[in-house]
Amino acid sequence: MRLLRFFRPSHQHTAFSATVLLMGTITLSRGVGYIREAYIAYAFGAGQQTDAYVAAFTLPDWLNYIVAGGSAAITFISIYTRFLAEKREADARKTFSIIITVMTTVLVFGTIVAEVFTPQFAAWMFHGFTADQLQLCVHLTRILLPAQIFFYVGGVVSAVLLSHRLFLLPAFGPLIYNVFIIAGGVAAGRQFGIASLAYGALIGSVIGPFLVNAFGAAKIGTGYRPSFEINNPAFREWVRLSIPLMLGVSLVAADDWILRYFASSGIGDIARLNYAKRLFAVPIAILGQATGQASLPFFSRLFGEKKFEEFAATVNASVYRITAASLLLTGWMMAIAVPLIDLVYRRGQFTFADSQSTGIYFFWFSLSLALWASQSLYARAFYASGNTLTPMVASSLITLASLPIYALLFRTLSVTGLAIASDLGITANAVVIALLLHVRGLVPLGGLHWKELGKAGVIGVVSGGLSYEVMHTVALNGSRTADVSALAIGSLTWAAAVAAGLWLLGSDLPRDLRRKRTATFPRVAEGQTEETMSAGTEP
Image (cartoon, rainbow, N blue to C red):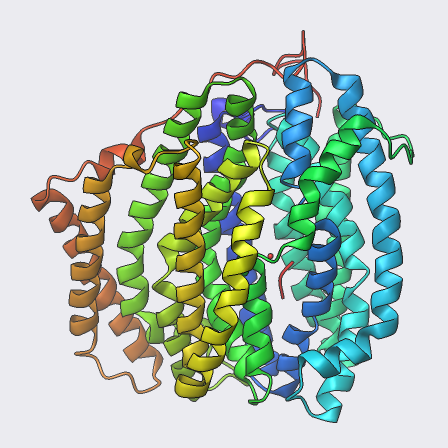
């Protein structure tokens, strides 16, 4: 009975239950995402048209990033949560209406401008494309651009639900989006070719991120009234917090753009990098994204209630558990990279040679898993404190400083160098954000369980190394039997080594990962109880 309540749209979650729910739905969404990528690899392989399809997401992503800047899910949720905590529901609804009205208007205008100048952008960004590739990329980009309007509005609406601690419907938006991409390819692939995927993405953005969240918001009575009251104090505060996110360039978002820019001159290089990065994104999403998305409303409330010590302890505890788990998982991912990629993607137009190249990229991407996961939490700690300027200035400077490193490693190590440069960039980003939180006294680094993190690091290295050596007793020759055998042997060796290492070193990590961290926050509105309430886009 309690489990059924957990899956009710009106169920108000704790930090722990929200994290569990988001981990589950994100895992499911990434599973569907794998089917999506496997279908694309099967139907279109890793060639020029697949490169054009992946590249077509770049300008829409830019538009969303420049205009929205992540403000829907970050700055708005902090303001809205504060209003709810102060029992100012009318102000919360008014701010919601103004932001939706103004930003939708801005996005519609931006979409029209982007549609007009798509050919010029594509020619500059993807200088290595052939004329046919550029033409296809422009066509696909123009299909995808309007989706950003629905992503943005859906993001603001989902922020309302998250502020009410209603996580179920926002969690299913990405899943529905991925389903429609696959459905578009299956239903219209023969008629429209790879453009069918873009049409599926456009329809999915309307039904998934937008309509599902709008339904949930309507159920809890989130009133929307069109308003251009730009002098509203809350709206001006939102603009002040959002401008750094809109003007700054975080490497978290820019990494994909930089990879595509440099890889555009090689046939299939963008596609293979994308396949590796998308599979690598699965553990990032489960560990970092789910925890970060679930934690932001609770971080914001703790900071808003001036419970600074509890705020710091909560952030450090979350970072410790996610980082330690990531360090263990990294060893396994690096060891089994090639057979995993081959089993996941090789079919149809995707060859064993493609698997070998993609496996190398996945190997290097995996090295930075702990940094990708931890930076997500550190960034949200900053946002919860109402400071978006400091982390975005730091991230922008790191992005600019990273560009020569991408260029240098690409010239010396080709496409593999790009994956290594990505690792170096995200390492710098995570370390700098953590240091800034420490220097400002928000989240002291001394609060981390460094001893346990050290144990996890040692165990990750040893277990990964043993798994790699044992796995290579199987000759990877392109057969499914060899892939399964290597993956099974490598995984069993890694699991045994991790279990033995945790036991020999007396690690507290297994106990800490099982520990529920409940949060006792006040209800979102006076008299409103759980029983009476009704209720990255990526290529």
